[in-house]
Image: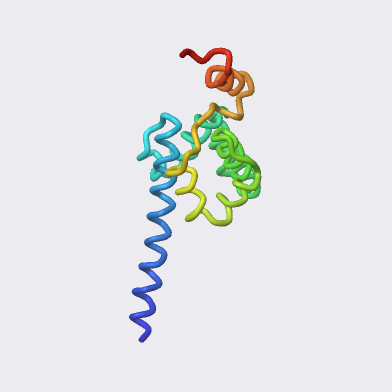
Length: 137
């Protein structure tokens, strides 16, 4: 009886892990980064800092106990804003990652630029700006 429970419990968490990894892989790919980077410890944080426009020193801040919680949440918030999502989506990425990472990765969200770098973010928004006057017939 206990062996059966352990097998199903393990399979459940394996499915959850695969969903999270697949979603994060697709998010990295959408942002123009290598998808495999999401499975490499510490390097995945570095790539997230590149996606969000933050300096590489943030990898260190994400490794300091206590500060890692603040900087990790902040980094995920900037990641969701880099894809045009709001704070509610950030909460979902933190508390329900097996749902929200695949939603961000496989959904219709587009990478709109590094939110953490205001100049680059504004430039990306201007580049992707839609104007009714600029449409060609």
